[in-house]
Image 1 (cartoon, rainbow over the protein chains, first blue to last red):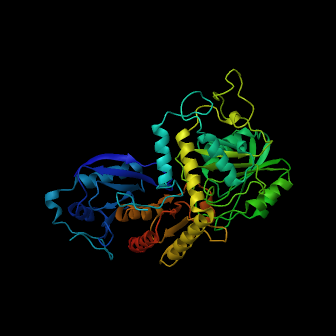
Image 2: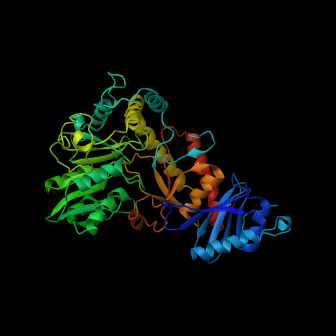
Image 3: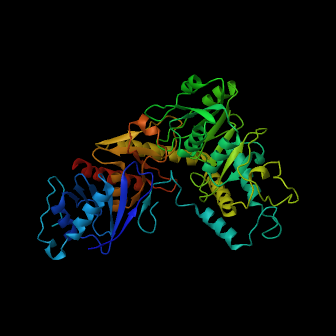
Length: 113
Length: 388
Protein backbone atom coordinates (compact mmCIF):
# COMPACT_ATOMS: atom_id res chain seq x y z
CA UNK A 1 0.00 0.00 0.00
CA UNK A 2 1.60 3.23 -1.14
CA UNK A 3 0.54 6.84 -1.09
CA UNK A 4 0.57 8.14 -4.66
CA UNK A 5 -0.64 11.67 -3.98
CA UNK A 6 -1.72 13.89 -1.13
CA UNK A 7 -4.07 16.47 -2.55
CA UNK A 8 -5.06 19.76 -0.92
CA UNK A 9 -8.80 20.29 -0.68
CA UNK A 10 -9.74 23.92 -0.89
CA UNK A 11 -13.44 24.37 -0.36
CA UNK A 12 -15.79 26.06 2.07
CA UNK A 13 -15.21 23.15 4.45
CA UNK A 14 -15.10 25.17 7.62
CA UNK A 15 -11.69 25.95 9.02
CA UNK A 16 -10.19 22.47 8.98
CA UNK A 17 -7.09 21.72 6.97
CA UNK A 18 -8.01 18.78 4.82
CA UNK A 19 -6.09 16.54 2.42
CA UNK A 20 -7.28 13.75 0.18
CA UNK A 21 -4.83 10.85 0.30
CA UNK A 22 -4.70 8.70 -2.84
CA UNK A 23 -3.34 5.15 -2.70
CA UNK A 24 -2.05 2.76 -5.32
CA UNK A 25 -4.59 0.11 -4.35
CA UNK A 26 -8.01 0.08 -2.68
CA UNK A 27 -8.31 0.35 1.09
CA UNK A 28 -9.13 -3.15 2.30
CA UNK A 29 -9.92 -4.80 5.62
CA UNK A 30 -6.26 -5.73 6.23
CA UNK A 31 -5.22 -2.10 5.99
CA UNK A 32 -8.08 -1.00 8.22
CA UNK A 33 -7.02 -3.63 10.79
CA UNK A 34 -3.51 -2.23 10.63
CA UNK A 35 -4.84 1.24 11.39
CA UNK A 36 -6.27 -0.18 14.62
CA UNK A 37 -2.67 -0.61 15.84
CA UNK A 38 -1.77 2.97 15.22
CA UNK A 39 -4.43 4.97 17.04
CA UNK A 40 -8.09 5.02 18.01
CA UNK A 41 -10.03 3.28 15.25
CA UNK A 42 -13.77 3.37 14.72
CA UNK A 43 -15.30 1.06 12.14
CA UNK A 44 -18.89 1.04 10.94
CA UNK A 45 -19.62 -2.10 9.02
CA UNK A 46 -23.37 -1.42 8.99
CA UNK A 47 -23.07 1.62 6.73
CA UNK A 48 -23.92 1.11 3.05
CA UNK A 49 -20.17 1.10 2.39
CA UNK A 50 -18.22 0.27 5.57
CA UNK A 51 -16.75 3.45 7.02
CA UNK A 52 -13.73 3.84 9.29
CA UNK A 53 -12.09 6.65 11.17
CA UNK A 54 -8.62 6.65 12.70
CA UNK A 55 -7.62 9.26 15.21
CA UNK A 56 -3.95 10.05 15.76
CA UNK A 57 -4.25 12.38 18.75
CA UNK A 58 -2.42 15.65 18.32
CA UNK A 59 -1.86 15.00 14.64
CA UNK A 60 -4.82 14.12 12.46
CA UNK A 61 -7.92 12.09 11.76
CA UNK A 62 -7.95 9.80 8.76
CA UNK A 63 -11.24 8.44 7.44
CA UNK A 64 -12.58 6.62 4.46
CA UNK A 65 -14.63 3.71 3.20
CA UNK A 66 -13.56 0.17 2.46
CA UNK A 67 -12.84 -0.37 -1.22
CA UNK A 68 -11.99 3.26 -1.99
CA UNK A 69 -8.72 4.35 -3.56
CA UNK A 70 -8.49 7.42 -1.37
CA UNK A 71 -9.32 8.64 2.12
CA UNK A 72 -9.56 12.00 3.81
CA UNK A 73 -6.99 13.35 6.21
CA UNK A 74 -8.14 16.10 8.57
CA UNK A 75 -5.11 17.79 10.10
CA UNK A 76 -5.52 18.79 13.72
CA UNK A 77 -1.88 19.46 14.59
CA UNK A 78 1.05 20.98 12.76
CA UNK A 79 0.33 20.13 9.10
CA UNK A 80 3.83 18.90 8.22
CA UNK A 81 4.17 16.78 11.35
CA UNK A 82 0.65 15.42 10.95
CA UNK A 83 1.22 14.38 7.33
CA UNK A 84 4.53 12.84 8.33
CA UNK A 85 2.88 10.89 11.15
CA UNK A 86 0.28 9.58 8.76
CA UNK A 87 2.89 8.62 6.17
CA UNK A 88 4.60 6.52 8.86
CA UNK A 89 1.31 4.75 9.58
CA UNK A 90 1.05 3.76 5.92
CA UNK A 91 4.71 2.85 5.63
CA UNK A 92 4.44 0.51 8.63
CA UNK A 93 1.66 -1.49 6.97
CA UNK A 94 2.84 -4.97 6.12
CA UNK A 95 0.17 -6.79 4.17
CA UNK A 96 1.53 -10.19 5.17
CA UNK A 97 0.99 -9.21 8.83
CA UNK A 98 -2.37 -7.54 8.28
CA UNK A 99 -4.67 -10.41 9.18
CA UNK A 100 -2.91 -10.98 12.52
CA UNK A 101 -3.57 -7.45 13.68
CA UNK A 102 -6.18 -6.64 16.28
CA UNK A 103 -8.51 -3.70 16.08
CA UNK A 104 -8.84 -1.56 19.20
CA UNK A 105 -11.93 0.50 18.62
CA UNK A 106 -13.42 0.54 22.11
CA UNK A 107 -17.04 1.26 21.18
CA UNK A 108 -20.08 -0.20 19.50
CA UNK A 109 -18.62 -0.33 16.03
CA UNK A 110 -17.82 -3.52 14.17
CA UNK A 111 -14.19 -4.04 13.22
CA UNK A 112 -13.37 -6.03 10.08
CA UNK A 113 -13.60 -9.78 10.72
CA UNK B 1 -32.42 12.43 -8.56
CA UNK B 2 -30.04 9.49 -8.65
CA UNK B 3 -27.50 9.69 -11.48
CA UNK B 4 -25.98 6.90 -13.54
CA UNK B 5 -23.35 6.27 -10.90
CA UNK B 6 -26.03 5.65 -8.31
CA UNK B 7 -25.31 8.94 -6.56
CA UNK B 8 -28.08 11.09 -5.17
CA UNK B 9 -27.41 14.79 -5.75
CA UNK B 10 -28.81 16.97 -2.97
CA UNK B 11 -26.68 20.06 -3.50
CA UNK B 12 -29.04 22.08 -5.65
CA UNK B 13 -28.43 25.09 -3.42
CA UNK B 14 -25.00 25.24 -5.03
CA UNK B 15 -26.01 24.39 -8.60
CA UNK B 16 -29.04 22.56 -9.91
CA UNK B 17 -28.73 19.02 -11.22
CA UNK B 18 -30.07 17.46 -13.29
CA UNK B 19 -31.14 20.10 -15.76
CA UNK B 20 -34.49 19.51 -17.46
CA UNK B 21 -34.41 17.71 -20.81
CA UNK B 22 -35.66 20.91 -22.43
CA UNK B 23 -32.50 22.70 -21.28
CA UNK B 24 -30.21 19.96 -22.55
CA UNK B 25 -32.07 19.84 -25.86
CA UNK B 26 -32.00 23.59 -26.47
CA UNK B 27 -28.32 23.96 -25.55
CA UNK B 28 -27.48 21.02 -27.79
CA UNK B 29 -29.47 22.58 -30.63
CA UNK B 30 -27.71 25.90 -30.16
CA UNK B 31 -24.24 24.39 -30.05
CA UNK B 32 -24.86 22.37 -33.21
CA UNK B 33 -26.03 25.39 -35.18
CA UNK B 34 -24.12 28.30 -36.66
CA UNK B 35 -23.49 30.64 -33.72
CA UNK B 36 -26.04 33.40 -33.47
CA UNK B 37 -24.65 36.57 -31.98
CA UNK B 38 -27.17 39.36 -31.70
CA UNK B 39 -26.01 42.39 -33.64
CA UNK B 40 -22.80 40.67 -34.64
CA UNK B 41 -23.46 40.14 -38.35
CA UNK B 42 -24.27 36.92 -40.17
CA UNK B 43 -24.93 33.51 -38.75
CA UNK B 44 -27.71 31.76 -36.97
CA UNK B 45 -31.35 31.76 -37.86
CA UNK B 46 -32.49 35.30 -38.64
CA UNK B 47 -35.74 34.79 -36.75
CA UNK B 48 -34.01 33.53 -33.61
CA UNK B 49 -33.28 36.06 -30.89
CA UNK B 50 -32.45 34.00 -27.81
CA UNK B 51 -30.97 37.03 -26.07
CA UNK B 52 -34.05 39.17 -26.50
CA UNK B 53 -36.36 36.28 -25.68
CA UNK B 54 -34.50 35.40 -22.50
CA UNK B 55 -34.34 39.02 -21.42
CA UNK B 56 -38.09 39.36 -21.98
CA UNK B 57 -38.71 36.14 -20.06
CA UNK B 58 -36.72 37.41 -17.08
CA UNK B 59 -38.50 40.77 -17.15
CA UNK B 60 -41.80 38.89 -17.12
CA UNK B 61 -40.71 36.59 -14.28
CA UNK B 62 -39.65 39.48 -12.06
CA UNK B 63 -42.31 41.91 -13.35
CA UNK B 64 -39.39 44.19 -14.05
CA UNK B 65 -41.00 46.38 -16.71
CA UNK B 66 -38.91 46.88 -19.83
CA UNK B 67 -36.61 43.94 -20.66
CA UNK B 68 -33.80 46.48 -20.99
CA UNK B 69 -33.84 46.83 -17.20
CA UNK B 70 -32.22 43.40 -17.14
CA UNK B 71 -28.56 43.05 -18.10
CA UNK B 72 -26.75 39.76 -18.51
CA UNK B 73 -23.67 38.94 -16.46
CA UNK B 74 -21.68 35.83 -15.66
CA UNK B 75 -23.66 35.28 -12.46
CA UNK B 76 -24.69 36.80 -9.16
CA UNK B 77 -21.11 37.59 -8.16
CA UNK B 78 -20.47 39.75 -11.22
CA UNK B 79 -23.90 41.34 -10.81
CA UNK B 80 -23.17 42.24 -7.20
CA UNK B 81 -19.76 43.61 -8.10
CA UNK B 82 -21.30 45.69 -10.90
CA UNK B 83 -23.88 47.06 -8.47
CA UNK B 84 -21.54 47.73 -5.54
CA UNK B 85 -18.64 49.15 -7.54
CA UNK B 86 -20.81 50.84 -10.13
CA UNK B 87 -22.64 52.99 -7.59
CA UNK B 88 -19.53 54.97 -6.67
CA UNK B 89 -20.12 54.76 -2.96
CA UNK B 90 -17.02 56.75 -1.96
CA UNK B 91 -17.53 58.43 1.39
CA UNK B 92 -20.84 56.67 2.01
CA UNK B 93 -22.10 54.42 4.75
CA UNK B 94 -23.40 51.00 3.67
CA UNK B 95 -25.56 48.57 5.61
CA UNK B 96 -25.38 44.86 5.00
CA UNK B 97 -26.14 41.80 7.12
CA UNK B 98 -24.56 38.77 8.73
CA UNK B 99 -26.44 36.38 6.45
CA UNK B 100 -24.58 37.52 3.33
CA UNK B 101 -22.59 35.39 0.97
CA UNK B 102 -18.99 36.41 0.30
CA UNK B 103 -20.13 37.73 -3.07
CA UNK B 104 -21.69 40.63 -1.15
CA UNK B 105 -19.29 40.79 1.78
CA UNK B 106 -15.98 40.76 -0.09
CA UNK B 107 -16.70 43.64 -2.50
CA UNK B 108 -17.94 45.69 0.48
CA UNK B 109 -15.00 44.76 2.72
CA UNK B 110 -12.63 45.72 -0.09
CA UNK B 111 -14.18 49.20 -0.30
CA UNK B 112 -14.05 49.49 3.49
CA UNK B 113 -10.44 48.34 3.58
CA UNK B 114 -9.58 51.06 1.07
CA UNK B 115 -11.34 53.58 3.35
CA UNK B 116 -13.86 54.32 0.60
CA UNK B 117 -16.94 53.38 2.63
CA UNK B 118 -17.93 52.73 6.22
CA UNK B 119 -19.80 49.51 6.80
CA UNK B 120 -22.36 48.27 9.30
CA UNK B 121 -23.11 44.55 9.52
CA UNK B 122 -26.56 43.94 10.94
CA UNK B 123 -27.00 40.67 12.82
CA UNK B 124 -29.68 38.04 12.52
CA UNK B 125 -31.48 35.66 14.86
CA UNK B 126 -30.85 31.93 15.21
CA UNK B 127 -32.89 31.17 12.11
CA UNK B 128 -31.05 33.64 9.92
CA UNK B 129 -33.86 36.19 10.11
CA UNK B 130 -32.90 39.85 9.82
CA UNK B 131 -35.27 42.11 11.72
CA UNK B 132 -36.16 45.12 9.52
CA UNK B 133 -36.08 47.25 12.68
CA UNK B 134 -32.36 46.54 13.06
CA UNK B 135 -31.83 47.93 9.55
CA UNK B 136 -33.73 51.05 10.54
CA UNK B 137 -31.64 51.46 13.69
CA UNK B 138 -28.41 51.25 11.67
CA UNK B 139 -29.22 54.06 9.28
CA UNK B 140 -26.87 57.04 9.44
CA UNK B 141 -27.15 60.40 7.70
CA UNK B 142 -24.67 59.27 5.05
CA UNK B 143 -26.12 55.79 4.43
CA UNK B 144 -26.49 55.26 0.69
CA UNK B 145 -27.01 51.54 0.28
CA UNK B 146 -28.63 48.55 1.97
CA UNK B 147 -27.38 45.25 0.54
CA UNK B 148 -29.17 42.10 1.65
CA UNK B 149 -29.78 38.53 0.51
CA UNK B 150 -33.37 37.69 -0.25
CA UNK B 151 -32.90 34.13 0.94
CA UNK B 152 -30.12 32.76 3.12
CA UNK B 153 -28.08 30.10 1.33
CA UNK B 154 -27.45 28.50 4.73
CA UNK B 155 -30.89 28.29 6.34
CA UNK B 156 -33.26 29.02 3.46
CA UNK B 157 -34.77 31.84 5.50
CA UNK B 158 -36.53 34.33 3.23
CA UNK B 159 -36.18 37.93 4.36
CA UNK B 160 -38.89 40.56 4.42
CA UNK B 161 -37.36 42.58 1.62
CA UNK B 162 -40.55 44.58 1.21
CA UNK B 163 -40.29 45.95 4.76
CA UNK B 164 -36.54 46.54 4.48
CA UNK B 165 -36.86 48.12 1.06
CA UNK B 166 -39.63 50.40 2.29
CA UNK B 167 -37.43 51.57 5.15
CA UNK B 168 -34.58 52.19 2.72
CA UNK B 169 -36.75 54.09 0.27
CA UNK B 170 -38.29 56.25 3.01
CA UNK B 171 -34.76 57.34 3.89
CA UNK B 172 -33.60 57.85 0.31
CA UNK B 173 -31.29 54.82 0.50
CA UNK B 174 -30.71 52.45 -2.42
CA UNK B 175 -31.68 48.81 -1.96
CA UNK B 176 -29.61 45.99 -3.47
CA UNK B 177 -31.01 42.47 -3.19
CA UNK B 178 -28.97 39.33 -3.73
CA UNK B 179 -31.49 36.88 -5.15
CA UNK B 180 -29.00 34.14 -6.00
CA UNK B 181 -30.92 31.54 -3.97
CA UNK B 182 -34.43 32.83 -4.50
CA UNK B 183 -34.68 33.85 -8.16
CA UNK B 184 -37.02 31.43 -9.87
CA UNK B 185 -38.00 29.79 -6.58
CA UNK B 186 -39.63 32.65 -4.69
CA UNK B 187 -41.97 35.26 -6.16
CA UNK B 188 -40.25 38.58 -6.81
CA UNK B 189 -42.39 41.45 -8.07
CA UNK B 190 -40.19 44.37 -9.01
CA UNK B 191 -43.20 46.45 -9.96
CA UNK B 192 -44.30 46.65 -6.35
CA UNK B 193 -41.18 45.84 -4.31
CA UNK B 194 -38.98 48.82 -3.39
CA UNK B 195 -35.84 47.35 -4.94
CA UNK B 196 -33.30 49.33 -6.97
CA UNK B 197 -30.94 46.53 -7.90
CA UNK B 198 -31.56 42.78 -7.99
CA UNK B 199 -28.72 40.36 -8.63
CA UNK B 200 -29.44 36.80 -9.71
CA UNK B 201 -27.79 33.73 -11.11
CA UNK B 202 -29.19 31.36 -13.70
CA UNK B 203 -27.73 28.02 -12.66
CA UNK B 204 -29.64 27.38 -9.45
CA UNK B 205 -33.44 27.42 -9.33
CA UNK B 206 -33.78 28.59 -12.93
CA UNK B 207 -31.95 25.54 -14.34
CA UNK B 208 -29.52 27.38 -16.58
CA UNK B 209 -25.86 26.59 -17.07
CA UNK B 210 -23.23 27.93 -14.68
CA UNK B 211 -21.81 31.20 -15.98
CA UNK B 212 -25.04 33.04 -16.73
CA UNK B 213 -26.82 35.50 -14.50
CA UNK B 214 -28.06 39.03 -14.51
CA UNK B 215 -28.77 42.27 -12.78
CA UNK B 216 -31.99 44.26 -12.68
CA UNK B 217 -31.24 47.98 -12.63
CA UNK B 218 -34.11 50.29 -11.79
CA UNK B 219 -34.93 52.69 -14.63
CA UNK B 220 -33.05 55.95 -14.23
CA UNK B 221 -30.36 54.50 -11.98
CA UNK B 222 -26.85 54.79 -13.44
CA UNK B 223 -24.02 52.38 -12.66
CA UNK B 224 -20.47 52.78 -13.89
CA UNK B 225 -19.89 49.70 -16.11
CA UNK B 226 -17.40 47.11 -14.86
CA UNK B 227 -16.11 46.56 -18.38
CA UNK B 228 -16.18 48.23 -21.77
CA UNK B 229 -15.63 46.82 -25.24
CA UNK B 230 -17.40 45.42 -28.24
CA UNK B 231 -21.15 45.70 -28.38
CA UNK B 232 -21.79 44.24 -31.83
CA UNK B 233 -23.56 47.34 -33.07
CA UNK B 234 -22.65 51.04 -33.13
CA UNK B 235 -19.07 49.98 -33.79
CA UNK B 236 -18.04 53.44 -34.99
CA UNK B 237 -18.51 54.85 -31.48
CA UNK B 238 -15.25 55.18 -29.57
CA UNK B 239 -17.08 55.03 -26.24
CA UNK B 240 -19.39 52.41 -24.85
CA UNK B 241 -22.93 53.00 -26.14
CA UNK B 242 -24.76 54.77 -23.30
CA UNK B 243 -28.05 52.90 -23.59
CA UNK B 244 -29.04 49.74 -21.77
CA UNK B 245 -28.29 46.93 -22.07
CA UNK B 246 -25.27 47.68 -24.29
CA UNK B 247 -23.72 49.89 -21.63
CA UNK B 248 -23.24 46.88 -19.36
CA UNK B 249 -22.81 44.00 -21.79
CA UNK B 250 -19.44 44.56 -23.44
CA UNK B 251 -17.93 41.51 -25.08
CA UNK B 252 -19.38 38.32 -26.42
CA UNK B 253 -22.41 37.18 -24.47
CA UNK B 254 -22.61 33.71 -22.99
CA UNK B 255 -25.01 32.41 -25.61
CA UNK B 256 -25.22 28.77 -24.45
CA UNK B 257 -25.90 30.12 -20.97
CA UNK B 258 -28.62 32.44 -22.20
CA UNK B 259 -30.22 29.67 -24.27
CA UNK B 260 -30.15 27.37 -21.25
CA UNK B 261 -31.66 30.01 -18.98
CA UNK B 262 -34.47 30.70 -21.43
CA UNK B 263 -35.19 26.96 -21.65
CA UNK B 264 -35.13 26.66 -17.86
CA UNK B 265 -37.62 29.48 -17.52
CA UNK B 266 -39.81 27.86 -20.18
CA UNK B 267 -39.73 24.66 -18.13
CA UNK B 268 -40.75 26.44 -14.94
CA UNK B 269 -43.61 28.05 -16.80
CA UNK B 270 -44.67 24.68 -18.24
CA UNK B 271 -44.68 23.14 -14.75
CA UNK B 272 -46.41 26.15 -13.29
CA UNK B 273 -44.83 28.40 -10.70
CA UNK B 274 -47.39 27.46 -8.06
CA UNK B 275 -46.79 23.73 -8.46
CA UNK B 276 -43.05 24.34 -8.44
CA UNK B 277 -43.17 26.33 -5.21
CA UNK B 278 -45.64 23.99 -3.52
CA UNK B 279 -43.43 20.98 -4.14
CA UNK B 280 -40.39 22.84 -2.85
CA UNK B 281 -42.24 23.78 0.33
CA UNK B 282 -43.37 20.18 0.88
CA UNK B 283 -39.81 18.92 0.38
CA UNK B 284 -38.49 21.43 2.84
CA UNK B 285 -41.10 20.50 5.43
CA UNK B 286 -40.44 16.76 4.99
CA UNK B 287 -36.72 17.22 5.33
CA UNK B 288 -36.92 19.52 8.30
CA UNK B 289 -39.48 17.40 10.16
CA UNK B 290 -37.56 14.22 9.36
CA UNK B 291 -34.28 15.68 10.56
CA UNK B 292 -35.81 16.93 13.81
CA UNK B 293 -36.95 13.37 14.57
CA UNK B 294 -33.38 12.03 14.42
CA UNK B 295 -31.61 11.93 17.75
CA UNK B 296 -28.59 14.18 17.99
CA UNK B 297 -29.56 16.35 15.00
CA UNK B 298 -29.77 20.13 15.32
CA UNK B 299 -31.64 21.86 12.51
CA UNK B 300 -30.79 25.46 11.65
CA UNK B 301 -33.44 27.80 10.36
CA UNK B 302 -37.17 28.05 10.77
CA UNK B 303 -39.93 27.36 8.31
CA UNK B 304 -42.04 30.45 8.11
CA UNK B 305 -44.93 30.74 5.63
CA UNK B 306 -42.61 32.30 3.04
CA UNK B 307 -39.76 29.88 3.51
CA UNK B 308 -40.44 27.71 0.51
CA UNK B 309 -36.83 27.00 -0.37
CA UNK B 310 -36.04 23.28 -0.29
CA UNK B 311 -32.83 23.86 1.61
CA UNK B 312 -32.12 22.74 5.17
CA UNK B 313 -28.99 23.00 7.29
CA UNK B 314 -28.19 20.72 10.20
CA UNK B 315 -25.45 19.25 12.36
CA UNK B 316 -25.09 15.90 14.09
CA UNK B 317 -23.91 15.47 17.62
CA UNK B 318 -20.36 14.11 17.78
CA UNK B 319 -19.63 14.74 14.10
CA UNK B 320 -18.27 17.74 12.29
CA UNK B 321 -20.34 18.83 9.28
CA UNK B 322 -17.48 17.83 7.04
CA UNK B 323 -17.56 14.35 8.56
CA UNK B 324 -21.30 13.94 8.14
CA UNK B 325 -21.21 14.98 4.49
CA UNK B 326 -18.17 12.81 3.88
CA UNK B 327 -19.93 9.71 5.25
CA UNK B 328 -23.10 10.52 3.33
CA UNK B 329 -21.14 10.85 0.11
CA UNK B 330 -18.64 8.03 0.48
CA UNK B 331 -20.80 5.45 2.25
CA UNK B 332 -24.23 6.28 0.83
CA UNK B 333 -23.54 8.13 -2.41
CA UNK B 334 -25.47 11.20 -1.22
CA UNK B 335 -23.93 14.45 -2.37
CA UNK B 336 -24.63 17.41 -0.13
CA UNK B 337 -22.49 20.28 1.10
CA UNK B 338 -20.80 21.04 4.39
CA UNK B 339 -18.94 23.96 5.87
CA UNK B 340 -19.52 27.68 5.89
CA UNK B 341 -21.23 27.80 2.47
CA UNK B 342 -19.24 30.96 1.68
CA UNK B 343 -21.36 32.83 4.24
CA UNK B 344 -18.86 33.14 7.09
CA UNK B 345 -20.68 35.54 9.40
CA UNK B 346 -24.06 33.87 9.84
CA UNK B 347 -22.63 30.92 11.76
CA UNK B 348 -21.81 33.06 14.79
CA UNK B 349 -25.52 33.83 15.03
CA UNK B 350 -26.74 30.30 14.29
CA UNK B 351 -24.36 28.75 16.80
CA UNK B 352 -22.68 26.71 14.06
CA UNK B 353 -19.27 28.38 14.09
CA UNK B 354 -16.50 27.57 13.35
CA UNK B 355 -17.27 24.50 11.25
CA UNK B 356 -20.59 25.50 9.74
CA UNK B 357 -23.39 23.11 8.83
CA UNK B 358 -24.37 20.30 6.53
CA UNK B 359 -26.76 21.58 3.89
CA UNK B 360 -29.22 19.41 2.01
CA UNK B 361 -30.96 20.95 -0.98
CA UNK B 362 -33.16 18.74 -3.18
CA UNK B 363 -34.77 19.81 -6.44
CA UNK B 364 -37.98 19.38 -8.37
CA UNK B 365 -36.59 16.06 -9.61
CA UNK B 366 -35.84 14.61 -6.16
CA UNK B 367 -38.39 11.91 -5.32
CA UNK B 368 -40.05 11.37 -1.95
CA UNK B 369 -38.34 7.97 -1.74
CA UNK B 370 -34.96 9.58 -2.22
CA UNK B 371 -35.65 12.03 0.59
CA UNK B 372 -36.69 9.16 2.87
CA UNK B 373 -33.50 7.30 1.88
CA UNK B 374 -31.44 10.37 2.72
CA UNK B 375 -33.06 10.67 6.15
CA UNK B 376 -32.46 6.96 6.79
CA UNK B 377 -28.80 7.40 5.90
CA UNK B 378 -28.48 10.35 8.27
CA UNK B 379 -30.09 8.25 11.00
CA UNK B 380 -27.45 5.56 10.46
CA UNK B 381 -24.68 8.12 10.25
CA UNK B 382 -25.58 9.20 13.78
CA UNK B 383 -23.87 5.98 14.97
CA UNK B 384 -20.52 7.44 14.01
CA UNK B 385 -21.28 10.47 16.16
CA UNK B 386 -22.19 8.35 19.16
CA UNK B 387 -18.85 6.56 18.84
CA UNK B 388 -16.88 9.80 19.13
